[in-house]
Amino acid sequence: MTIAELKNKFAETHCTTDSIVAFAPGRVNLIGEHTDYNGGYVFPAALNFGTYAVANKRMDGCFVFSSLNIPGQRLETSDPKNCFFNGDESWANYPLGVLNEFIKKGFGDKITGFELMLFGDVPRGSGLSSSASVEMVTAVIINHLFGLNMPMVEMVKMAQSAENNFVGVNCGIMDQFASGMGKANHAIKLRCSDLDYNYAPIQINGMKIIIANTNAKRGLADSKYNERRAECEAALADIKTLRPQTRDLCELTPTEFEGLKPAIKNPIALKRARHAIYESHRVIEATEALAKNDITHFGQLMALSHESLRDLYDVTGDELDTLFEEAMKISGCVGSRMTGAGFGGCTVSIVMDEAIDDFIETVGKNYTERTGLTASFYTAVIGNGARIL
Image 1: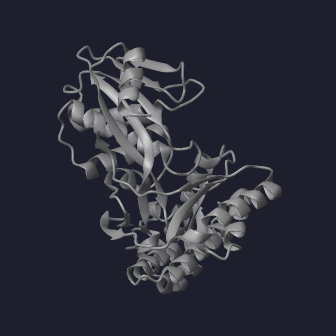
Image 2: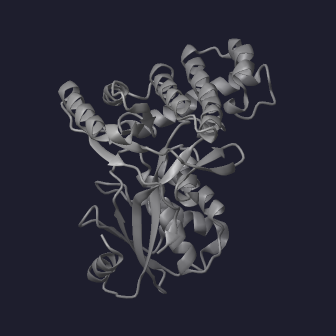
């Protein structure tokens, strides 16, 4: 949908032609899954699809939310601090949560009201961070409408806090950071413990990044995500009995972990910790391989990542495992893995240009035969982060 079309839709539904448009992308994580809330490394990139927001300022203290993706649902409130959306969909809690973060920062007197209409082209439930893109586009809109001059990194933190404390999903900061700080043709090597980051150019000449969506329902994703985080926190608490100064699991090297692992009492928590620590180290290895243009090793690390997420973290499931297995059978596939929280969602693969058509046809056909579902395939285009258009 073009900017002009979005503005026309806004004029129809919100009865005003005075509006601004912002965009925040979804993201794909190339490697480093379930490490962000453990203080580890991740390697995401912003995509060229995400969430658009059209908005205008009000002066009467009223806030109006609507979404073109969910026609007929509209929220109006003059008390955002005490408003949760309890309709069939909870989509409005994401922008409401961000608005509340600005109010908590002391901007309540400056934010005099607004009308906000959302439109997203991130496939819902895909694991490509549609929720983070909603949060970030809302933050950019509020910041711009009211001249608040909040730095992007601060808005990233606020968006994560909104999801943790308002929506109730204990996510790490990777999704919001990638959506807010993305850079075209680059991935971000981010250390989540302190937000130290650098951009790495994605130069895979003769290859493309292919995203495959399982189109499987992810109904338990949020609760299972919170469960995994609690299991990691239990492992960390046990490690602290031997090494009290440990702040995050992923500050440990694999060697240090092997020496401390006897402290972890629960075998499930032990598996979760092993994945997080070794996965964070894989990000370091993978970015070093990319810098040397060793895409073969990068692809091998992607496969190891998926196997760890399957065997140690238990977040893949039949659909993601099937896509991974079928992808790795294609001779032109350099590497593949699940991306996102798991329990459905997407895989990301690096595929040689000459093999892409065969990859999509063969993987898609075999996936349908094995699962009864139809996968969707996208060629990833790495774009810029959240911004006013």
